[in-house]
Length: 66
Length: 135
Image (cartoon, rainbow over all chains, first blue to last red):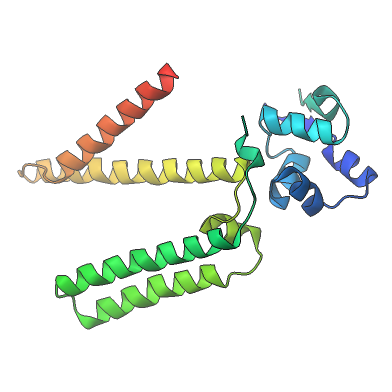
């Protein structure tokens, strides 16, 4: 199942680079890019960590692409 | 419990471990070739191949792809890629072993050593599958 995410929007709103967001979450820049492009669906722990980082709920950051 | 996603990303030690591991693999191959009396050209080729890759990994710079390959950059996505690559490589090896086993049988031979190699692969797969299903 493909997931849409608002990670790019949330990241750019805060003026963060993919590399700095990746460093903050201990994942690679390529992984942040893949999540933003919808090519990689993160695990639940990483999705929760992303949502917490942006002070959002998981379902506010990710949604089904159906 | 700490998730895979939150493991430390990158270390100088990891960089050298990846490179030195490759160099050691090359050294083992070279020693085996020397013991087996391989021609000098083959030994030089092995030294150049493994040494070249080890040096490339050591001085490979900050590219995330190279860092992930040599093992000093890890996260859950890179682990998944690694797992899929290993699974595909394993499937190719099993396929080659099965084909070689059948060819050996068709030539009227016992199938050795491919029968044992196939058995090791099959037993390992069943063991891992059973373990995974019980977790």
